[in-house]
Image 1 (cartoon, rainbow, N blue to C red):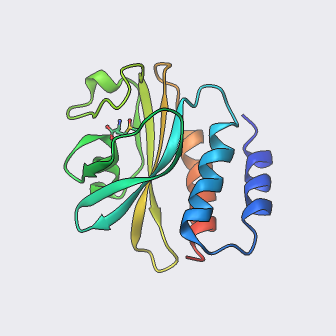
Image 2: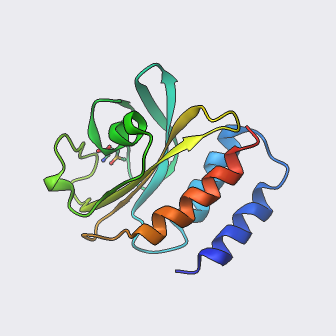
Length: 149
Ligand code: SME
């Protein structure tokens, strides 16, 4: 996976943009199409205390609301830390939006002030599809892109 190329492309496309939805939509699209192990790629936004709502995404239908105390997305939002789940069936409270999902990576998304504005969720139909390298490279992209929001 060539993260240098993906990073370069996203920064070029997002250059000067500060609209959160425009940025989320562009990231979801670019990341989703960067590798065929990414079967669902998108954002959940913090819309009320303790609540995530679906944002821009690519892939099949995603659940509309996720409270912070549910699922992998809720854990990433609640703990403010990346969640790498090799086997979703072994994750207590995992929300199965698609029964084909086997593994997940969820990253917290913060604005320039450091406030949590959402999470970035990638689901794969392959088991253990995500590594620390994925988490680190994608977190770096998210940090830079949403710093201006
Ligand atoms: N599986 C996620 C829910 C989001 S969807 O799969 C798109 C979770 O447990 O947080």
